[in-house]
Image 1: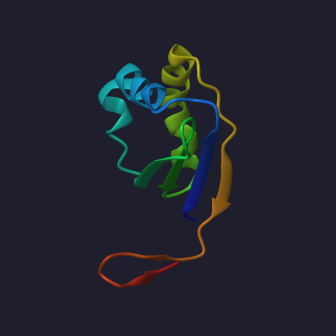
Image 2 (image 1 turned 120 degrees about the vertical axis):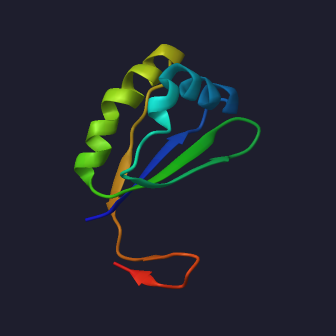
Length: 96
């Protein structure tokens, strides 16, 4: 079952977000089981990351990549994980 993972970083900078990608390298991008990734700022400081994964196991495997990269930058996360009820893509097809 697909899941959505929401991680809030209320007191972190968007530069730190970019540093995590630098620290994690290409492995941060090479995630075929990650369906979508979104990051948005929440004001002068802070940002939120939202990912949709094929399943919890795929997200768990990503921990081996994201964990060390975040530790290198000094960020900690408290992810919230929710089951996806439905997804509608640009093609208008409903997927559950």
